[in-house]
Amino acid sequence: MSVSHSTWLVVLMPYNLPPWLCMKKLFLFLSLLIPGPSAPGNNIDVYMRPLVDELKELWGVNTYDASTNSNFTLRAGLIWTVSDFPAYANLSGWSTKGKLACPSCHKETKSIRLSNSYKDIFMAHRRWLELLHAFRMDKDSFDGMKEREGPPRCLIGEQVLVELKDVMHTEKNVCDSLIGTLMNIDGKTKDHLKGRRDLEEMGIRNELHPQPLSNDKVYLPPACFLMDKKEKETFCNVLKGVKVLDGYAASISRCIQGKPPKIIGLKSQDNHILMQQLLPMAIRNILPKYVRYVIMKLCRYYRQLFSKVLNPSDLFKMEKDIGKILSSEARLGGPVHYCWMYPIERYLASDVETIHNKTSQNHDDGGDDTVLPIFCMPGRPIGATNVVKLGYDTLAIAHSHVLFNCSEIDFLRTEHLNILSHQNPKKT
Image (cartoon, rainbow, N blue to C red; front, side):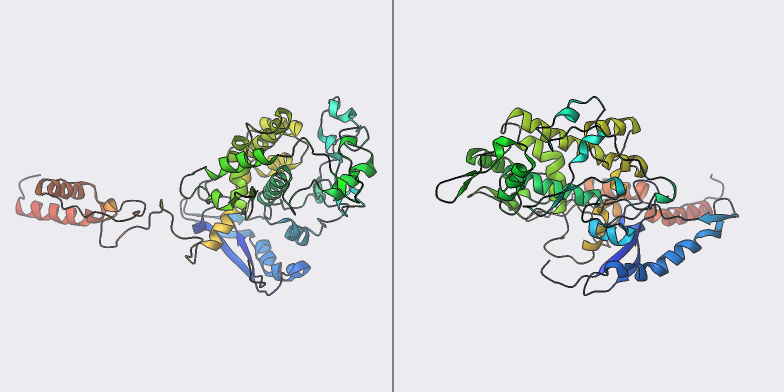
């Protein structure tokens, strides 16, 4: 992370393989390597040109099918691209910054420019709610206006772009902002003086407006979602004491700071585990009930969205429950684990062993080449190991197990059977 050099890799994932194989490292194709030292930006089209030409050529290739002993016309098509949001803009040609930053809402994106925070925000998420939902008429809790419009029209025909934004990075950004706001972490919280002044300018949430003091300072009334010191300590202690299976996630405790209570240095996988598993557990005894229930429902939404199996009827219900378009893209793209960056990150991190990607305790490296595979135990030893000498009876049992179960000596069994048949021609 301290090196400014940026090399980009373009990896192809064949989706016509079984679900348990198509995202494995063995079947990923490193098709392009875009050199640094800086990101290609809009010039990525130049680097992608050879790959595009090859993909066009693959749309109609005479291919031999060994299983049927016949030729057929192979048609390989690009389903979508997976990237972070900045690269998404370079690939699609639709800017992901500014007033029309949402590629799904397209020209129907509704945004407001905050004069204090200097940010574009998108307050029209109530459009996805049912027409008679109470939130549509609630002016005070939102942008001071009633919402009577329906959701934006889905892009159809030639408007549909063959890409899908990476949900992994969206989840990370949501998790970082959520934890930073709950714990009021400097640089991470979205509840700051500029934000409060924007609320005052919009004329909403009067109870949160900044109050000037006599000594030229400003008092920010605490919001209902802010943790006090004791709640922060409880929250951090719960996360610090969590232990997970080796290889399931990194050690979350390394990111927990006790005094003052703080969470720093979370990676994408850490946010993924926090958002879907640990956060609902850590807040169940803190924060008001109406606040933590909303957070738990948000975590449940992401857990359902990231499930390896998606039920179309559940996705329609999810769209009604939360005003985001992510579930619509899941209906088009299928389970999200086909569209995220985790397999690519593991692919990039697996070639050189360092302290950051060393072999896990559950890894099976195949063992010693001189030992038969049936005796290679999965995993690696922890600490000192004891050497055990087998007795004659145990060795005899192991010998019989090898003779009758090890495929590596099939040719020896066949040779032995031929010798016995030659020596005893009258016996079958």
